[in-house]
Amino acid sequence: MALNFHQLHIFYTVAERGSFSAAAQALHMTQPAVTMQVQSLEDYFGTKLLQRSTKRIELTEAGRALMPYAQRSIELIRDTDQQMSKFTKQLKGRLQLGASLTIGEYILPRLLGPFGQEYPHISISMKVMNTAQIMEEIVNHQLNFGLIEAPVNHPDMHMEAVMSDELQLIVGKDHPLAGAEIVELEEVMNYPFVLREQGSGTRLVMEEQLKRRNIDLNSMKIFMELGSTGAVKSAVEAGLGVSFVSFSSVKHEIALGLIKTIPIRDVQFKRQFYSIFLKSALLPISAVTFLSFLRERDLRQWI
Image (cartoon, rainbow, N blue to C red):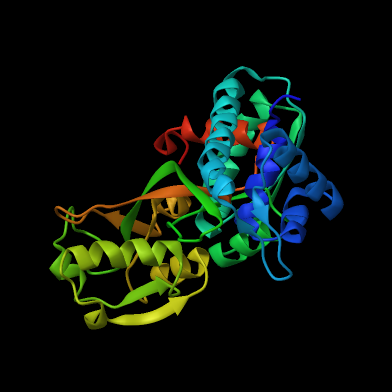
């Protein structure tokens, strides 16, 4: 009997999930099938890998030794899929992904057309929701993966940067700053702000950069907090305050002269967009191909 990658993947998932039933759910297998595959792996090595109890499984010494090799084998398969995705032009399948608001509403729609031209047989089902909802649906196996605007810390999630973005200061066309070519950060802080809600990716990036500039966030004149970028844009357009948003989200309003973006001297609000999926999951090759497509695109060409 040869060493079987499928069995290594199952063993790793059981160890990560802490039970055969949880692993079975994650792998879309029956619990007896998962148990049988782990037993086959134990037979191959001639030693117990897991100690079974009524509450939770525990790794034996041999199981602990095997874990890093099982993890590396999963990573090798992922790397292999990523490399080979460059040559797969006749793929078929359906992707189910989640995207946070800015990505789903303003970034991906401009990229799905070119992707569809290259891979016409892959269909995409996208849910636009906040990061917490995306993570919940990934954990519950309702989505293959997600695209989010700020890093997260979750023990079961693999996270990787796939695209770059930059927030910019926006003001209404009649705002006192509208005629400026460049402004100082201290000057901006004198005006009321209209911001996304606490916890949004855009808000987190803004707050992190301001903290680096020794700005006391409690001193900000926050006039309004809103749950969508569209609402923020409308409030800024109406003169209710200034804000920071992705340039991709205001391209239309800028073209119409409704909103202006103004650079801040020596300050940039750069950020990464991230893909997230379960550490124990092996994405379908169509999903790997889509993520490779995103990594190779310069967003500035599409926004």
